[in-house]
Each structure stands twice: as C-alpha cells, then as structure tokens.
Length: 383
Image 1 (cartoon, rainbow, N blue to C red):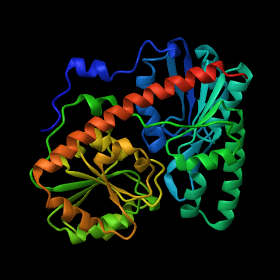
Image 2: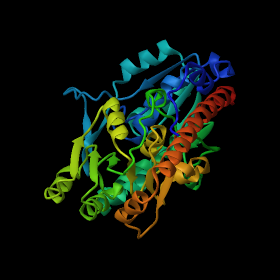
Image 3: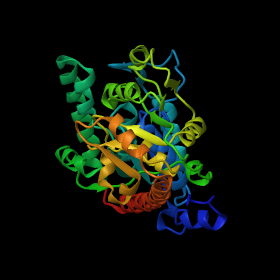
C-alpha cells in the first residue's frame, strides 16, 4: 500500500533535533547561484529552513534573480540563462556585521563565495566549503580550449583559496574527495542532500495502475543527455514525456520533438508546479552524462516516484536509496527500461514507491544532523 498522509506525530519524529548544541550558532552562506536555478541553488534553498531549526539563525548571501544595470554581470559561456554577478561589497559587509555569524559556508568559487571567505577571515569565523559542482568537467562541454584553460585556471586557484582555509570541505559523493584533496582541503566530509519540506508533508498521490507519463526536470543542457529522452519518446508513442526546465538546448530540443505529440515542454516551473507535475507522472528520468548527485531524483522519491538514473550519478553511492532508484547503464536505452517497468504489477510498483519515500525522508533527516555537527565543529576549530 502507499504511504499514508503524514500525521502530526510522524512530522515531529522526522523533524531535526532542536536540542543540538549548534542551537547557539549563527551561520552565513555565500553562493553565486540564484536560488532554485540549478542544483546548488536548490540544495541550499531546501537546507536553510530546516537548518534554521537547529541553529540560532541562518542567512544566505547570493545574487538576486533580477538584473540591475548598475551591476556588472557576465553570462556563463554556453549558457546565457545563468550569469556571474559582482556583489555589492559595502552593502553585504554591513549586513554581515549586523548578522554576526559564527560560521561561514562558501558554496561557489565565484565573487560571492570568495567574499564570504574574506569576511570570515577578517571576523574570525569558522569556515566550511560546499563543493557541489565539477566545474572543470562542465567546461569541457561548453568552452573552447583557450577559454577552458583560462576558466579552469581561475576555478582551481579560487577553489584552493577557500578549501585550504576551511575546517572541512563538504561533498555529496565520495568520488569528489580526491578532487578536493588536490585543492588542499584539510578534511573532506560526505553529506547527504536535503528535501523541500513541502515535498515531505504533502500526501502522496498513488501511482496509476499503468505507466502513462514520465518526467525529466532540470537544466536543458548538454550534460543532461536529453537526446536520449527524445529518442525514448519516439520509441514509446503511447507514453507521455513531460520535460520541465530551461537552458541552452531548449530550442534545439523543441525542434527535434516538433513531430512528437507525446512530448510536452513545460519550461521553468515554480516548486509547487514541479511537485504537481511530478505527482502526475509515474517515473522520473535522469540520464545525465555528468551528475554530481541528482537532487531531482531524491525529490521524486519523496513524492513516491521511482527514478531511472544514469549509473554515473552520485546518488547511487547512497545505498540506502537503492530501492527507489533504477540504474540506466551505459549503452542501455530508456525506452527498453520503460517497457520493462510497464510489465510490472501495480502492487510491485507501489511497494517500491513506498520504500522510495521512506528512504528519501530518512536521508533528509540524517543530512540535517550531519550539517549541524559540522557547523559545531567548524565553530570550535582553531582559526
């Protein structure tokens, strides 16, 4: 049977430990990512409300998603939908001093991340680094050799600055540990991924008796291997393919799918809209060539949806999630996997759905505890 709607007791049991010693500490986060526009932005958008319950306060310092002509902005090569912005240093410095954090977390190696590092050093704060994206690997997909060399030189230098000063560098898959060690990280800590609270609290919509719709949600970018999704749509004309998100490949993909009535592009969605679309679907697709973790797959599991995820995604390293994941190995076709799932009984699919939701909620609870422990250690570490 499907998981029942969470009761008040269930929610209390799954809440963070409010008696944690980190309750006395304030934490400032610095990120060059706009909230919910990519994996790192979404990660902290989901983390901070829950972490605020086990600390004295949290605050995010990041760019606004509204462009200001008075600010210098630089489009990311290969993806004009994302930009690097220069921070308003005097305003942020004043806000930082007013907040008086005990620990600073630098999330990205851009201007905001480096500013957080500088302010932490000046004010004697404990430091942590969140290392979520293999920027050097992404540069191979987007940039020419000259641009790649310049960009990688900057990224390596900036990452070394923030990693060497931090108590710990946090990664969400073990494969990144050698990378951060080479960057000079004194300690690498593997932490889980949080969930949006609303995804856990809303009642789960039971899976249909038949697999009718699959969903891809994320950036429409080269690393996501979206050509494989279009190929699957051609091979499975009786299954609807919902594609949610935006990115540099959107127009190209729309041209490729213009003769496919079973493909629908939804564009970038607000979180509640994504949840609704996920609840209408029976399977999540994540066939990425490069995926540090794959947060969208965890979100799908929280909604009781299994996820078909490329074998190289970091989420597979979390063995507690295996019941909600279906591995797409190199050379396998998405269409073949969909056809195999379509032959399973509804009882088997719904049992997997319930296990997926419970596993996702358990990882979220453990993740908040891990963050609280690391914040406490960073605050106590020698400067």
